[in-house]
Image (cartoon, rainbow, N blue to C red; front, top):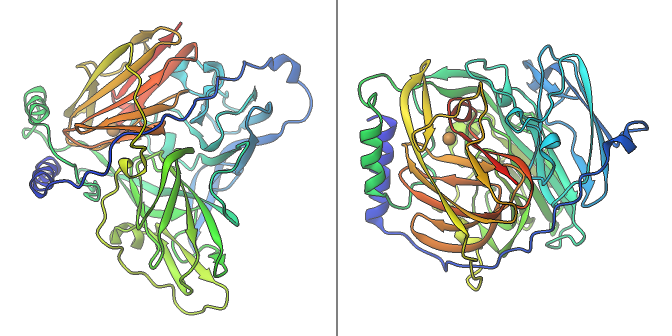
Length: 496
Ligand SMILES: [Cu+2]
């Protein structure tokens, strides 16, 4: 049974099992107006608020377990950058690597000249060079920064490297009372290629659209005739750059409310997190407060997704906070939580059966605005067609990374609905730059009020998100899995 057969079977059984549908609907968070583009000239001299240095370095994932990769400021993750919403910031970026780099400010509303993507015509941080960026951080909440260069078959480049770090933009009012906060950045190291798919079946599709399966079968002449495309696998997984059991534990006291800010900085993988005996009260998704905070036993994050959740420390002991998938946790994806006064080996227990669903946090009372236009995006895969990697296309067209064309023009202020119809056997974390979108439909179920910049679209499902094109210039849209974006899964919007 190959991956696609497996996923088909999984969707069918999920369909047969039926789906618990929590109340669908919600309230749209009022979106702040984009801040004006500050004059960089005024800040050309003087001291920067932060300095980032891109260079090859060595990371110690565990005792005697070293990896050589490109890092920010010599470590992983890159330094936590704390900004204040609306207060102008100066960041110096030095590039000691031998190639041009792009640093993307994921989840922020910045000019395309700063956002950090070659397709948006952001000037690169030149090899052995320097770039000073002056901008007004927004919106508030958990964001992150990461490299945005194409890797292709070079597994030392792009998100296969260690170039990622958290950003926290202080809001005017902190959502959710808590005693302290802990930032966790999830990432794999030692990437290699395989033709085996290790896509986790954790988030089983909630149903299956038969027309999309038919489209998939008809649109891929290679299906069943050639070996599966290359997939990424990793020698090690880590939280904050340390494999499970080899970093400093999170030390807590009974009764503390700890805000976890989790960033999935994986190049390709979705992850879950569970902490035996505890629940997570989800406060924000992708840094944006959810309309209805809710407690869950497991967090699920697609590549580039973020979750902010409060854990009440009410179950003393020494515990493993780790990926719910045993093989991934055993590969290092976890961190120890240690209560004051508790000793012994860290303990793990499997979480109760649970299905992650964005609608758990939606608002049943919110009315979705009617969009001015619906943009259909049919996603297809062409097995092994790009030098052995699967090639992806949106509406039949793989994005041309050499010429970087604008694929769609948008009207400034227009309200658009993106309708993703995934006729491929993979789950895709889809990301729109420089905007926040509202999730309005998940596999045929209307919903509202969930504001995100990445949405996970399961195989053979349709997902719809709405956004207002309120930033002029170029905005990149792509799958956040590095090998998918590198081999065709991109679109470029131009708003004017
Ligand atoms: Cu993808």
